[in-house]
Length: 156
Image 1: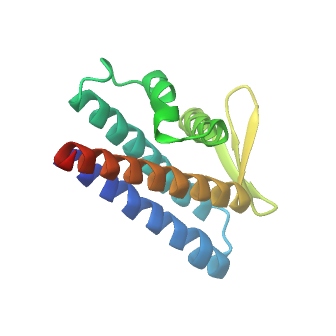
Image 2 (image 1 turned 90 degrees about the horizontal axis):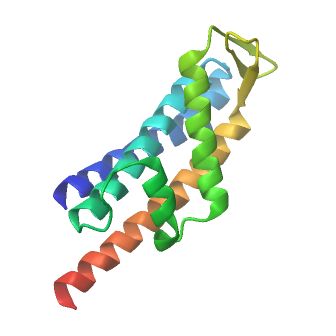
């Protein structure tokens, strides 16, 4: 359980850092290449949140394997909506696109990511803000549910 708490604290710290970069630093610098750095923080926070939740479920033998499909199955239990799951899926896909990208450049305050097939994906500050909003909500829901669960086990 302590490991899960540490993971949630790490995710919260990354979300706060990405939030500061997006809402304060980006406004001052106004450099689209900074979006990649902010997105990397968001990606790390997303990974840690998912891993923490899966680890918690494994500790209490509620799931066998820790996978993204297992996360999607248990999301309802933590009141994570389909819209939030879609945003998390979008973060996952965008990270995959960044990994396989052959070229990245900035255009009209967006970071454009192109892969080998010349398919492009763009990342704007509005996308970043949407990701942050959803991650904050998901983090809050997970933390709340886990703290309730721990209290029930301790005093129930």
